[in-house]
Length: 333
Ligand SMILES: [Zn+2]
Image (cartoon, rainbow, N blue to C red; front, side):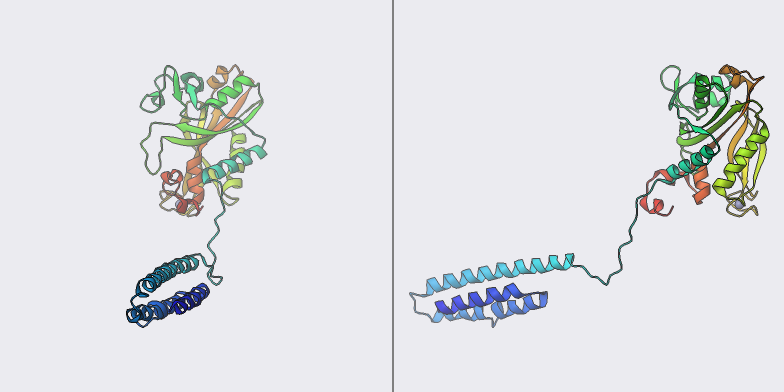
């Protein structure tokens, strides 16, 4: 009896080692512990043993039963995790997503790159500005509606979060004499309620050129170069009259609709044109504010919203998508 038990132990422990799948494991379990299993019949046989042997054999047999039961379930776990971690070479590969820059960053870089090639130098300025730089020096009259506390985020005293990147023009002109060719990207803040086209925080890119004999045609030439480089050679540009306190005359530049090629669609409100930026000749008062002589120097300035340009470029219909960081959206563009 002892010997039989020892043999069973040896045989089945080694068989268990070799088990490779759930089916083999299950048939081994039945062979040992099943109703007609070897261990089951051995346990049944104990009752026919001489009484003095019964306790010890019973104890050994039950210990073996406990051991084999725990080894069987351990093996089952092992097979399960092996299955989970096994590699099926015939399955299609997971798509690999490379990290990339956010669309706003990419568009900003692309715009700056175009203007840098045209000889413009990049400058940045503070996001917390004074009323002087944000409004006064840019020829905003004291009663201009943009100065309303409803429209800007006012901080303590004369400070506010800049509502436009235009104050950087003033800071650069104060520091350097003409000629100036500058471009300035940055964050701006206005008290807008978020909707599909507005956010209280957004990005602008501002450009300025001041020199002798700068004319309106120079502005149109530079912006035309930009439009063709950024949106494509086939895209047309047109100017319509507009108003900004810091330019005179002022214009709004539009491009032929890149969705419908000018035929008229919902994006362009069936006009065939999309407004992309504001521009104009620098107002003499702005030049005076930085001690440039408006009799000797003239200049042009322009400013565009990076979010709007990005939305047009990628056909995005809601500005908020650019800030939700939904990976499914970002992977598409
Ligand atoms: Zn259109």
